[in-house]
Amino acid sequence: MTGSLCLIARGVQRSVSRQTHHKAAPNFHDKYGNLILASGALFCVSIWGYVITQTGICWNLSPVGKVTPKEWKDQ
View 1 (tube, rainbow, N blue to C red):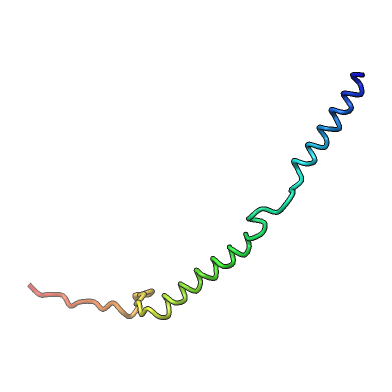
View 2: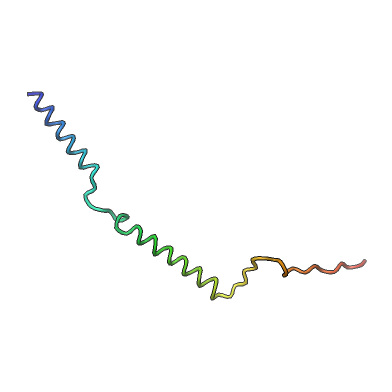
């Protein structure tokens, strides 16, 4: 009798372990993860595109040709 109970317990343990490793349905990230990532990247690129091209900010990326030395003052 104990042998058959042991076999039943092992069968139950196997089925429980199979169910815990099996995903029943995709979660939110499986469904919408890539869509949210792509829309966030598109939003970021579009905002920076607007800021760079339309706001008129002078970025001063290179000081070459923009800095002129001052004359020395004689004392």
